[in-house]
Length: 141
Image (cartoon, rainbow, N blue to C red):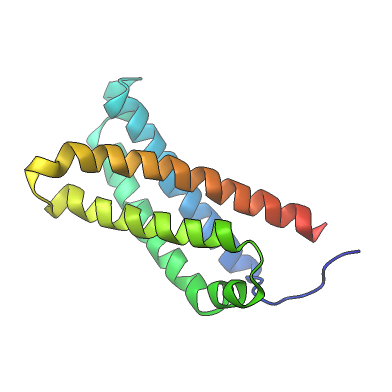
């Protein structure tokens, strides 16, 4: 039986906005990580332009996150469906925003730890984001 409840369901435009923004941020971050930290195609993937696109994508992803607060997040808290993955994403995104700010404005003595924290948390966020979306699709069928 198909679940016809619309509680917390995003409009199509918003769903695509969130998906594209989050995936763009995650993919540009992964590209930069591979180039800069792991030296895979460093001249291309580790370039400043990839980092710049990651920063732009992070700003757009922040706007996308803000667009879901009033309804999707509120409905999710109320229904308690996928509470763990939703709240985990929220915590990871908050931490990613904080570490992103610290990369630019934080003290030099913590920079290496912040870099490592940022990419480890980014990978964890991306995995949970994908699981949250895949689990959603299975429930809707």
